[in-house]
Image 1 (cartoon, helix red, strand yellow):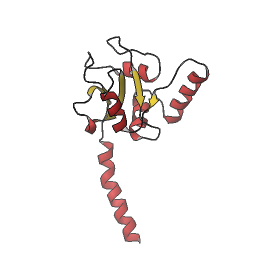
Image 2 (tube, rainbow, N blue to C red):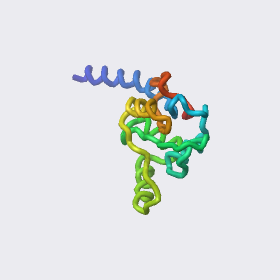
Image 3 (spheres, one colour):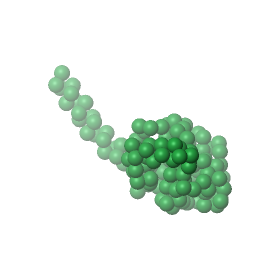
Length: 141
């Protein structure tokens, strides 16, 4: 049995760096009139401080479901909040009637499908999922 554990541990060590290199990107419908957004613009949308894209059109941000790695990465790097801080932030705004959080849309594939069918939506996915159905407007660093 210890040999089995050693093999599983080795596989984990091999796959961990691959997961670490996954890049999260912010995507929109390919028909939008702008080609990029700043980190501040993206943050303001996902924190409810803005409801408009850079071109002035209405924006509907989509989150991946809680617990998804991309969501944790996005919240920490863009919104500057860990999972509990992000949840508390939105709980306070909802309780006081000052905001509605981005819709939890499922996994990256669900987010991509919704964005590809609606030019007013914005979300984040792994860069490996990008194709002609969405446009990358920001890359997390």
